[in-house]
Image 1 (tube, rainbow over the protein chains, first blue to last red):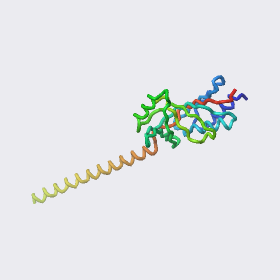
Image 2: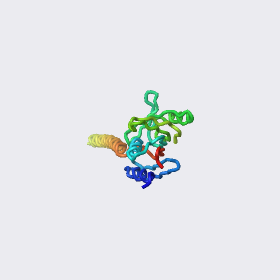
Image 3: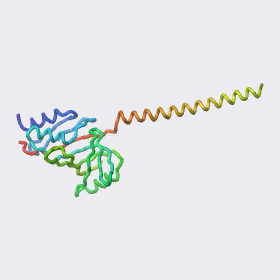
Image 4: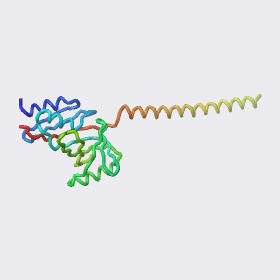
Length: 131
Length: 59
């Protein structure tokens, strides 16, 4: 059984996963999720880690409600009852400003999350794009 | 007798109007309750759509 297959099987087992594509060349797994899923990014990291690999930067597309709390932009993800802190990517400042202007609205945010060693500590979502 | 009839009519129409107002209030309450139920039962779609994981050590 190849490493790619191990990762594929482990990710496909997660409830709410629709499709998994694993690229050995890129060292990347692309996971598309079913509507109404309640998965969180740390769950993916933990799954990868449990199978003997180390998750790195993760690009995420997530739908949620934008809000500004005490000057900090947040994204409420009701599927998981979680709240992601949003940070500004120096290269995508315009996207972050768009997020600020859409406070109180539902939007699709694309951004990057970088796991910490324990994979559980909440990490911010660095905003790349807002739809 | 005529006067009495008029009075009855007025009284009836007042009670009808009152009844309609009550119905409207009830309807409004019902709409609010149904609306609250819909919001709690069907929350706005908000979830992960796609995740691209970079994985170290995979070959």
